[in-house]
Structures are given as structure tokens and as C-alpha cells.
Image 1 (cartoon, rainbow, N blue to C red):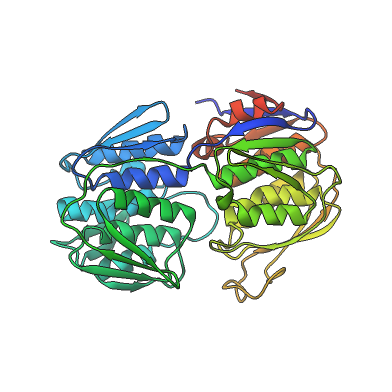
Image 2: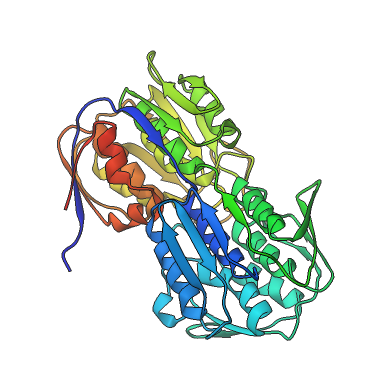
Length: 433
């Protein structure tokens, strides 16, 4: 099969309008939750991304039906024909691990293959497995995946070692139909978690949010089908706002509520960005140029780790020295060599810069970066290692001198809604082939 490439010619400031749909990280989790309903569920405003098709294939393999029409994804629950997520899905994404709880409820047993996703650092399944054991499941590791068995999941008290988004989702999906009450301590509170909980509540789940990262779930016997409309993807919205700023243009982003971008907006404002914000759209420009910043990523409501890849490119166009401290994933800076090959002046360190010591402070993980700007980037031949790094490569190519060839574009197409159309609408000269 011929490798797909993007050829990008810098074409000046990017300007125009972009409408973002729901997040790929939200739609796939809602699809898994819909397995638990006794009637069909419809998820609206779903993005047209590869992740939806991959997740649909997994659900159909175990006996569900998935229908797609425009921006709607409908999951029709059915009897589980095979409680084993096929080995053909090994390493494609991290959805199989989230299917364990629902499959245990529906079939009493499950097998999921080794999970995958972007190579941004260890995202161990131990939190998920330990949580399901706390519900009473018998969990067994195998060379090719994880086996689970339980006649009935029973509510429990779980304190997560770290407010992991995925582990919080696993606990929610197990707790909603478990016998009795479940209390999750140190839970993640990202907007996508709240969105999933609200969807489960529409299905009939009893979920309460308590102070100090606690979620309380009272298990119910059955769940209904439900309808929902996803809010806009905050990662995609931020990425396109930065696309305007980094090229000296301005992009107006529709579809993402302001409350999902509070920390991001303030960070960009400190760098010199000027915002116009309405109930319908958000627009950023920087007529006076960009200033450097020191930014630390963190769990919500901190600066999201998925925002830092476009931010790194923006740092190269800010006058002075900027610092980035990544505290969520230890290998998130693996894309930096690609930017360096395009002329970015970035140094990475294994020490904690730009913030207090984090959980990687005594490891060899290269998780801090110092960036010098303003730097003239040059076009290059770059392979995208993951979804978010892929977007940063497009931004670097858009502001570089000379053409660029981007490889591994399937990554960005897995996570962003029709990126070729969106970038072309903003004026970028992009040839896909």
C-alpha cells in the first residue's frame, strides 16, 4: 500500500473559520458506555475520525451494531456474541481496556488484547486491572492480553494513585451497574469525564460529584438508551487558535464552549494574544507579536498535556526563551527532534523546569524543554509519531521557509475532524496524496 503523504507549501497567515465537533476521546468512550443500555443510544456531533471506525469495529465484533449518519453515531446493543475483543485490534487504541467492565456486566467474562495508542509514555493498565479486581473481578494477564471473569461486580471504594482519565472511565463504566455503592477518590475531572458521566446519567445511572476529586456511584440493575450531543473538542479548538497565531493570522473557532478553554485562553493572553469571545465562537490574534512563557502541563483544570504540542511550535515564534514542563506523560516530548530538524531551537532536560518537582523528577525522562524564539523554521521531511505531534508538524510546516513533506498522516486523521479540508479552508497550501 502506498504511503499517504501531505505536501505543504507555506502560504502566509492562516485566516478564517473552523467548526470543531466532539472530541475523539469523548465519542469512543460514549460508544462503549452505550453497550450497557437496553435500547439504542445516539451520540450527536461526532467527529469524522478514524477512531470512530476502529471503536465501531470492536463493538461489532462482540455483538453490537453501530450505525453512522452524518455527525450521528448510533449504537444498538445486542447479546454478546463473543466476549473477546479480537486480537486483530491489538495496539490500535486504548478502547479495549474500557470494554472490560461493560463486557463483565453483559457476559460475565471478557478478553481484551494489548492496548495501544500514541507512543507518548507509559499508560499502564495496572490502574484499570486493580480497580476491576476491587469490584470482585478475577483478572489474569496473558502474553497477548487480559482475561477477566466475574459473576457480579460489587460496589467498592477505590483511590486512584493518580487522577488518570482512562482509569476513572473504567471505574465509572464498571460502577454504574455494580451491586451497591462505589466511591472513587482522586478521580480525573476533565470535561470528557463529566460529559461521559452526564451521558450515563441520561441512561439512568446514579452519579454524584463530591468535593476533592470524589465521584459517588450507586449501582442500578439496568440502563436505558439515551441521546446526547457532544460539546466541541477543546484540544482541536486550541490547536486551530494556535494555527492562526503562529502564522500571524487569526482563526475563528466555532463549536467549543469557552469554559473548556479557560486555562488555555489565559496562557495565550499572557503571551500577547488578543481574544474576541462570544457564545458562538472564539478568535485569537497577536498584532503586537508574541512573548515567551513558562508553562506546566497538569491534570484538569491545569494546562492540558494535549495542548503543549502546538504550544511548542508557538514558542518558536515568541520573542525570547520559553519553558515547558510536562508532568502527565514522560515521553510526550518525543516529537521534539522532528521540530529540531526543521530548525527549532529546543533543548530538552530530565529535570523539572518551569514548575515544582513532578512525579518524574527522579527519573531519566526528558520532560522539560527550553525554547528560543523567534526562530526561522525551514521545510523538511517529517514523520508524524502521534496525533498531537502530527498537528504540531503541520503548524511548523505552515510557518517554515520552503516546502515540507509530512508522513504518518494517518495519525492526525485518526484524531482530527477532516483536517485537510479545515486547513485548506484557512488558506494553507496542502496537497494530500
